[in-house]
Length: 110
Image (tube, rainbow, N blue to C red; front, top):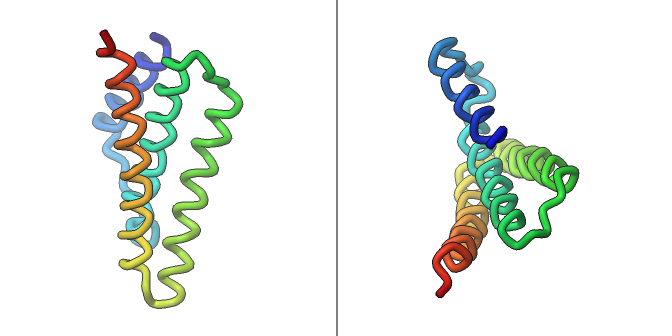
């Protein structure tokens, strides 16, 4: 419940403060959001499976975002940023859909 309230507070603060992202970081923001969503859905799945560990979640969240951003940065330096960005989104998307499917099975099992 605390996490849901914190998320709601963060969204409301973001809407109220209307933050801007520097132009140099804008290509990395969507990838960071997708990586963060992967960690969040993995955390929800772990909670439902009763194996959730808060330290592991924080490390997973931060490392997912940093590794995804690093891959996109390296791709930009090599001149193939959009291809690597697409690859990162596809891989993380598959993981997200796998976690959502597991959550759905857990919630709606007979």
